[in-house]
Length: 52
Image (cartoon, rainbow, N blue to C red; front, top):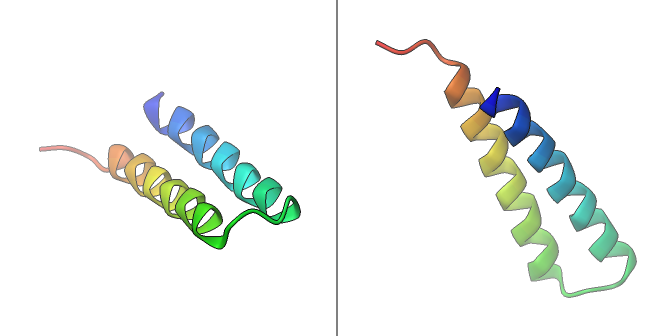
């Protein structure tokens, strides 16, 4: 369940980064959103791994 929510969050963050790109906002904001999206996808993947 949490992995699905984290993947949705990653999608929203990527959409935000693309929106900021169209608005010609600073590059560091776009990079920050993309980094957060990647971290969200990594967390979603790690939650799907079987635990001990």
